[in-house]
Amino acid sequence: MGFWQQVWVVSWKDLRAEARGHAATANMVAFALIIVVILSFAFDAAVSRAVLPGMLWAAVFFAGTLGLNRSFAAEHAEGGLVGLLVAPVDRAVIFAGKLAANLIFMFIVEAVTIPVFCLLGNAGPGPAWPWFGLLVVVGTLGFSAAGTVLAAIASHARSGEMLLPVILFPVLVPVIIGCVQATRSVLGLAGMGPYWTWLWFMVAYDLLFIAVPALLFEYVLES
Amino acid sequence: MVPRGWWLLRRTIGIAAFVLLILAQLAAFLYVPPERTMGDVQRIFYFHVASAWNAFLAFFVVFLAGVLYLFSRRRPLDSLAAASAEVGVVFTTIVLVTGPLWAKPVWNTYWTWDVRLTTTLILWFIYVAYLAIRAAVDEPDQRARLSSIFGILGFIDVPVVFFSIRWWRSIHPVLIEPGSMNMSGPMVATLILSVVAFTVLYVYLTLYVRDWMEIKEELSEAKDRLRWTM
Image (cartoon, rainbow over all chains, first blue to last red; front, side, top):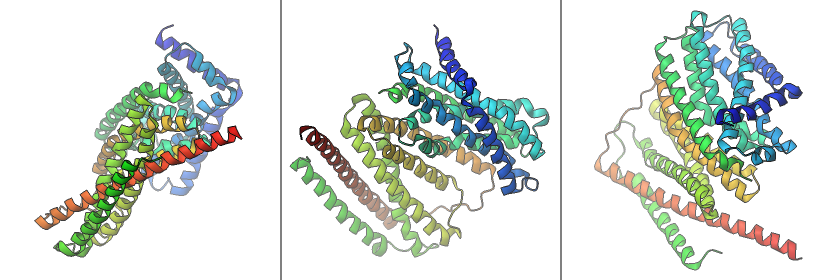
């Protein structure tokens, strides 16, 4: 099997497990939506539209940590990690497969959350929607790449689900700032100039947090 | 066990740190003249900058020791990384406390989302996270491996955080522009003395904590052996 085929097998396993009733994605969607509603109460978004980009990404990323936690914790619980480790594939394949699965879960969450958010916030990208889509892909890739490797680390720890947000969000600061600032441009709260700066910046972050964890992943999974 | 020669060296470094710190205090409070516009409060600068320098040094050591540990699997390297991270977090905390104390009379606010302040704050969070990982993993080899990886990822993230905050600030209005200081000869001399004193203190504290961690590990291994023989 080629590299991409192996990656697909690993992520297909996670997608099937999810489809067979783990229901993490449904929880993530519900959590993201309730965060949007709570932040609307907290900041009175109807009055101050400047808070909208921050509300969206806070909701999506906080909800995303639920899915990341499950990504490796489920393997530990059922002894699935041993099965993954004895599979004759490179450790980077396991990282890429897990990353792809987490990315797809995040896209599902965003596909529901973002339209509802636009509806409730009475805001939208309008004709700039392709740029919004590009930004969502690039930003979510950064979140999932850093999230996948840190979730793997946290899964080895006592109460790892409590550890993950503490170790993940400081590392994610560049992605959060980038997503929020680029979303301001797309929603018409700022010009399109900063959009490209932030997009390229996040592409660089993505590459860094795919390359370095892929190299280090064999050390993460050692046991 | 800590060998006798090593213990003497460590003790000597400790005494040197003590003497240098007293000299640095005398220089900062008595020798150096007060700054023209900021007055006496500017004296905090000598301890603030010395702590900041050592915080960065400490986290670089965490990164380096982490890389070397992953290649060599020598446990003393992991103890060094752990000790350096603990001391680094203490120095970063000193930076984050002395900064606002200095900022209040000079900028008329305790905090501003300036790039250096904000990056230092995120740096503090990253290394608190590093210590949280160490606290949450019990098995020594696994703890060493996972924290080394986080030490590497956290360190390469720092410049990225710095640039993200810098561009973020260039979009938002900057309310308070930190003024530049023209330093006189005695001020430069005091700063250098203070940085050297704090660096020797960093070396002493890190070696001390590292040895302490090694002894703790030996003790728990000895206890395990005892449990098996009895």
